[in-house]
Length: 260
Image (cartoon, rainbow, N blue to C red; front, side):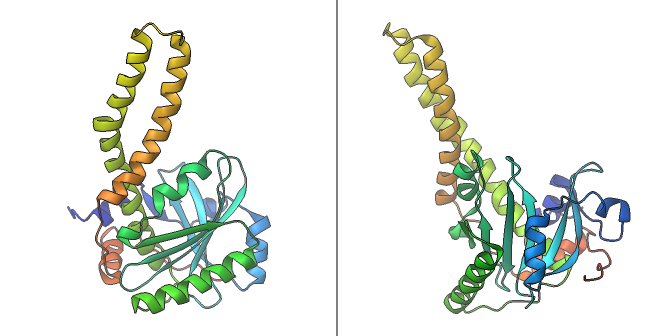
């Protein structure tokens, strides 16, 4: 069995599948016409579809930019607000991510969980039209290309999309695991000790209030530990060739879907 984390993350953890050739799966795609329409007018074309999760998992459509230098996915966030994500993978393993903001509580932690310059995952979030998002992503790609001295492979296949996704998933998954460890071993015991000291000291603070304070504190501490874990660790970049090999070993690359 292949022990590569990039194989395992696709095949065993998130159960990613190329469903481009399955009409019944494509019919289940999460459609976001208010974004996909404007991006199509900008020249974006469909590359294919993938499912994340078992048979009942969510299905997403993947688009390529007019110059084949970025992938686009669109979705609704937890508050059903439309959002877009543009991502580019360089040959040296750097990922450039330019995304719409999340709404609600997700806006507080989404970027802290994903943006990881120490591991060459460079994320920027902003509000704006599809035109503004694409323009900003193009500017960032040119700037980072000059800075890194790397090159961009064609972003025109599901195989390439899965290579990018595997790197993104490993970075976010490992960071979250390390954040949880830090949370349980340091921050949560410290928070409980503080709340316990307040309650048992006989102060006027009611125990229900203390419980509420602890709940809020633990939530924020959990997100802070995820951010801090990233500062304390680095996931070495993986060249594109290695990521593509992992995709092939996971047997994910299916037949390309016709462009629209």
